[in-house]
Amino acid sequence: MTTMFVLPVLKQGSTAYYDSIVGVIPCKVEAISSEYPENLRPSSSQKVCATVTRTTGAFKKGTQLTGWGLDFFPRESLRRRRYASYIYPYQVQA
Image 1 (cartoon, rainbow, N blue to C red):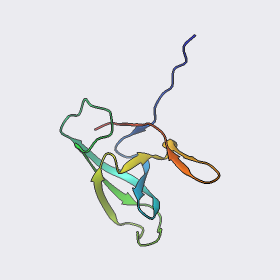
Image 2 (image 1 turned 180 degrees about the horizontal axis):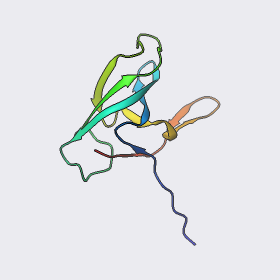
Image 3 (image 1 turned 30 degrees about the vertical axis):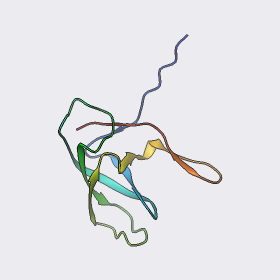
Image 4 (image 1 turned 60 degrees about the vertical axis):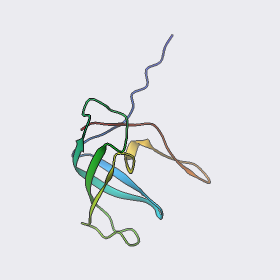
């Protein structure tokens, strides 16, 4: 018996986190562009534009963020444990 596991998808209009050195920053994805739109794996060939949704440290609400597909991930991909947080696999839809 096989079990299907559906990966969370980072796409335009979805809520996400930005992976920064001070921790994860909540944001909303505004646009995603990619050199290879058929490739769903997160990579540096994808450009993501997002808006911060909550003030966290130096990141103020409404600030525009731009980064690679590797810098942003869907909120469903974050797993918090007792002493650490883990980012589980996800897909990026351009």
